Image (cartoon, rainbow, N blue to C red):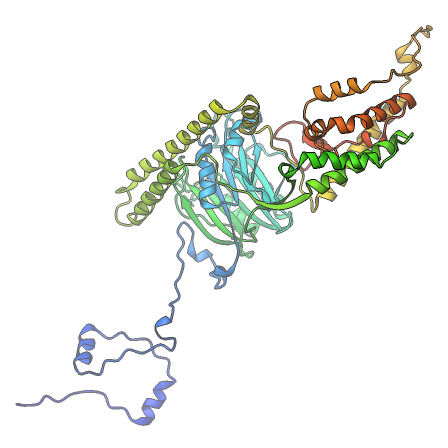
Length: 592
């Protein structure tokens, strides 16, 4: 049998050493070569120093963003990111539960909504859309229906709304500022021009150019989202070229490159400065029902891990009322009756506080805000899981057949929306049918957003209280100054006629029975400054009645009202919903 010569390359020792330092392109052998090497027993795969536990680096791919404009940072995985979204709702009135569920499911930090179609009086819709631990800023359209911009923000981020001048007529906007992180979040909605609204594209381009100049002069990073109704997928259009030129001259760039409208156009925008490296990823989400998809952004920024709040409380249920009454009587007996009414009140308050601290001391606990609504049930959870499963299935089939699983996904979205509405309806039907009128009134206040209080942002509660105290004191001084300037005698008696009136010499003193009857008839309302809750004072009234009667009669006899009882707990309340919570003049003092 004749042996075939094996043809090959021959290398000397020096040639092989020289090849070690040469930069050669990686060559992958063909299948035939690999098979031949394996048959001859000389095929060896290069090992890895880390062994079987070595991990390969994986690149994260993002959809809905032009990858050529994104700088990949190797340390992104170790950063804390904020989740910021925008959605053109085209009326939020019947989609509030869907938006609330979207914010909870995706753990959104800042959610901008355009075309809310809300007014200043839609407190019930705002309450329905706002999960626990969030606040909603409403910027309604004035003068006509529709439009409007809103912002749903996590309360622990401590963001606040700012306004800029002048007033723009061709678009609506909402600006939320994060002073701690130096970031300005902006949402813009531009109604499409028509003969009905009389808006012109040329006017919009001029106003938008002025708006961008104003935002560029505002300190901090910039993230602008919204619906400009400019077809970014048609760069040859004049309005698109003008907007792109405006952004470019300001050092800004629009990052959305995918369709955001059901007709295939790119109407929604995400705008940021190119040199700030604020954006990490952008994606479009069709899970919300509208003619626009939601735009989701992950940006670099600190995010609170949990929403925890300290809370002080007393365990009144642990009080032994027999021992409480004995200790209270012992403290009062050791305190002699003073002639000065102020001393009597101070001594009584101090004794009641001491006894209360012995039997129910102040405790501190930390409560965590649960964003999940209390009416969620197993049906809602199952519908949400099915919706997510159909979404994943539809996204996987996009490259092969975009319409193959879309109908099933749309049906799952509709079923989840119906499950949310049905669960909330059944929950409150059962709750109201079994609750007392008092409990029903409290729940109705919550549903109508009447119990929620808003306060300006401040570094500490002490600083905020001092600011309000100064503001309200100045208002009182200004009011007194105006009254002093008036001649009250001339206003009451312009003709200078003598007026006869009955004389008043002294007050009539009260008995213990009258004091007891008045206290028993009074409601169980309690002020935070009270040494004892009203219900507890009523329960131990026989022990306290002699002291209370003496204080009242001493005040009536001397005509001196105790100065400690002239102090009230003042709560600032907005004069009407929708006002800017950062302006002091929008608050009135509510005394408790």
